Length: 471
Image (cartoon, rainbow, N blue to C red; front, side, top):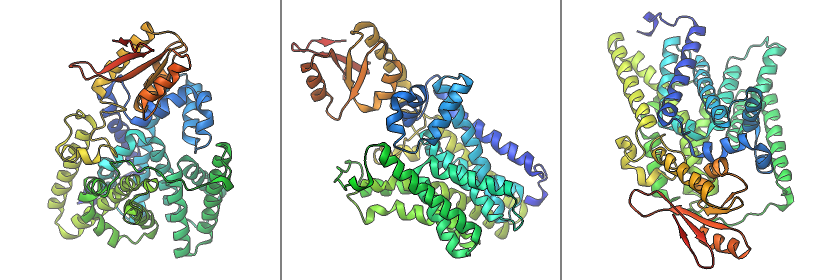
């Protein structure tokens, strides 16, 4: 079947198609939500940091700030707003991610059309879309990691300095963009270096590991915490971080992918791509050994394993269709599967948060603290963004220019971006206690909280010795 489809016989045309499709698909949820952005970290991290990087520098410099530095550079160079910069970068990064999947699948000895199938199958999976929703630097790091893997898997003995330079750049970007993907990348390279005993892989492994360790040390120094000062402090595990919810999350994100992924895994001769999948699956079930330690972020590993399982599942489906079925039947099944996957993916992109796709709606109570059940959400339901902005506008018009507004952490991004004059926003797990403390220190303090009145989303209350309420 696949050999007779000559539509994309030239690889450069296929790459252009994949990039355009991925950018178009990623734009769908943004257009539905317009003019509001989607993504929790988008409104609480990326946009505020890009807009006010000097204010946040102390915080971001103690992390792995490469991606936001790139965003800020684009923001300054182009004059685009912070929000538009973040959104456009998300489009481009998602397009590049699709291309990286297409490119790395070349090592599987598939035809161009089969590689297009694997790519489209992958990008519409919930794990990929959830990551693209607000973990933009994760998508960026995964993209550079996949490109680097493709270079390693297609390594040439006559590699010239240009090729080697590109590989060093990809290694640097992968490690410096995100610490979680950086760890996965370094261990995967190390494992592959042991398996193949290739000098070039060992060199890149050493470079990646050394760079990662340097960045970790720098992050501790910048944050004011020396390496010798690190202490294991007992952390309060969130009430939603329980085995039942983690199992439900794994079933929803990865369950339907397991069978075809096993087929792809068993038949794939390429061990490099197997290593990160095995590692991410181990991380997904780290709660079995450490049930009271959420610092291992099993939920993040579950989503990451879903991204890798999607790739293996797409490959497994190709193997089954090509080897077991006749050409015309395989084509019909492939088309039907892509249509179904795309429909579910688009439903996840566009359906309202309070009425999600049935699979995610059934599991909503168990998974919504880990993953949104629809992309039409940032720190609150998209349809409520206008009400929040109206409340902030009311604050700007009816409170003192130096007022302190106290509320939940989830609204901190909107408050930073839209509060006027010298008003500042403070958040706490106990907002009322913080508000009363600030009031005793002489500040003009207002509580900002959800309202229980019908048709009213937010309430604003002045904190004074008389506790006067305000609308």
